Length: 158
Image (cartoon, rainbow, N blue to C red; front, top):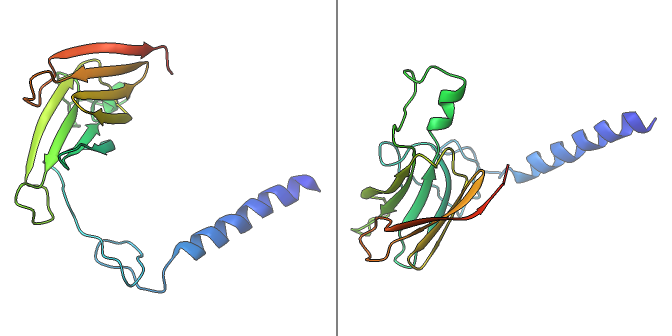
């Protein structure tokens, strides 16, 4: 009897959750259901970044993005998919003209040790990236938005 009630309970909770999350508003042009007093707009898109996995905001208001494109090469034909030969990347996106959309995108680091990075924290001049099996710290010592130093802070994850 317990075997029947657990799946039924899960289904009921999911139905309540997903129906409760929908607004009375209709779906907008982004395909999102939003409350009437909110608006969703596009801030950045490809080719400024590809397959983002995580992001952080620095003290200058710039968005730092980890990208994961090279993971596709393990089970797929690498000629059919985007591939960064020097590894996955950490990108810096910025809205320099304050119009609400990113207008600059630059590579902070492209590293062969980065294969599907899933976490990022920007703390001062240090950028901490989690990418199994490592937690990597990149340090920009001279402020040119390029890492001057790389160290493995921790290892053995995943």
